[in-house]
Length: 98
Picture 1 (cartoon, rainbow, N blue to C red):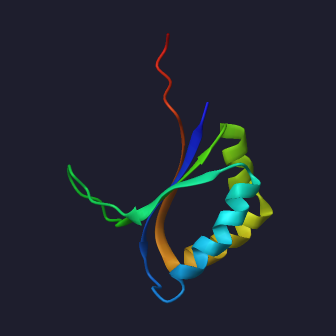
Picture 2: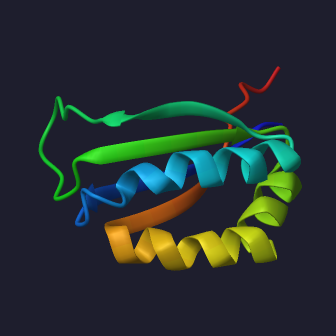
């Protein structure tokens, strides 16, 4: 079952935010992930204190966690925490029972 890692955030350092994409993608790909969404988010119902969203899709929860807990990802999180404020969640895909 697929699993998603979702970053929901505000940009606090507009000059350095552009560094994240090129640094993140090789690490995501190393763990079999793919970039699904990276954009401004429009809220249709209610509001959120965060304006941007990035979603990575992985083949399994284990691969998603391996990516997130990897040394490369932890190092990248240092930069992410300097240039953004927000949160990250791990969300397994919903499968309709047969």
